[in-house]
Length: 322
Ligand code: COA
Image (tube, helix red, strand yellow):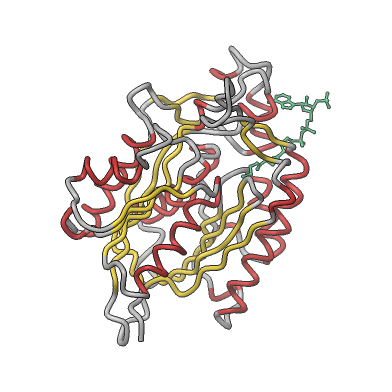
């Protein structure tokens, strides 16, 4: 029986600077009321110059290792999900490896936008199951404030910065029901033009800003995420009533509520941080998981369903027994 990937520790990092909707409305043509009503967002954290993807990923990784009672020497793989790396290469993950003082195994970045953390969990789980790694850090770290178009009020009010990490440890296999029970990943590249960044280092004079067709994304998000949740439940012969906590991608309170209604899940079993963090892309799911783990809502033994969707479109789920 292949080993299970146990979520041994969870960590997070949020930039010190908190920006309220009212503060944003001083420079953007918007209002606190519009943002709250359409998205549920009340504030977001914005990174200072030193709070880069590497810096925040490293801090969240340190916290995850401490939570697991693990050392840098226990790490033999690092996967960082990010769309906002410090450099095209080396990967954020190897900079994190060096900063932690870890010396074994592999490190690479993964580009799957807001679904990046769920994608990373799936890849790490496969590597643990096939025996290639025993202790893997999966991190989502994003500084979207650097790629927002401040002239587009339809997008710049929606995002924030931050990082979240989990430390996965190969479990004993037989005798333990803890760990990642399933992951399911999807992509539909034909929808690549409804949410994208219009440039990158490979394009001359185009650093890139985020572009989104909000209504289209909203429509696909509700449908695809509800499907992803049903897929995970069916694959594990479960119903929504068996799930202790849903930890959804934190893009918009209305998407989260619509999904909860579709599934018949009471909202008090859904972790919500979008009000305080806004959309932190690949960091949003581990930040939300950390929030409910740290304050004791999510406990050892709980069945937790994670899901996310992002530009691509890419989406997926992970079912975890904590
Ligand atoms: N402040 C004030 N008004 C704003 C605004 C802002 N920040 N942004 C847009 N508006 C205005 C528009 O100009 C428009 O005005 P008009 O009717 O006079 O033309 C009006 O509000 C409605 O705009 P619209 O874009 O149709 O709003 P919406 O109801 O679709 O809500 C989103 C916009 C972005 C909140 C919504 O589409 C959404 O949540 N989409 C999904 C986003 C998402 O989750 N993306 C990430 C997935 S990973």
